[in-house]
Length: 64
Image (cartoon, rainbow, N blue to C red; front, side, top):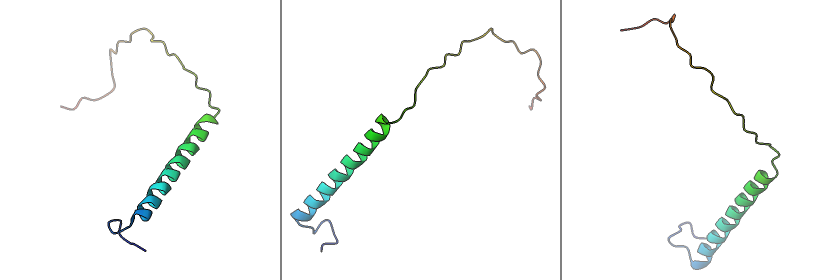
C-alpha cells in the first residue's frame, strides 16, 4: 500500500480518479433530484412606491 500520491502506481491513480468521478456524479445527481422535487412556488411580490415623505422633525440627538 502506497501512502504517498507521488510514489503511487498507475492503478492507484486510476482508482482515485474513478472514485472522484463517481462521488461528483453522486453529488450532482443528489442536487438535481433535490432541486427538481422541490414544490416551492415562486411568486413575485410587487411593491409600489408611495408618495415622497419629508422629515421635518426628529427625536434623535446629533453628536458633533
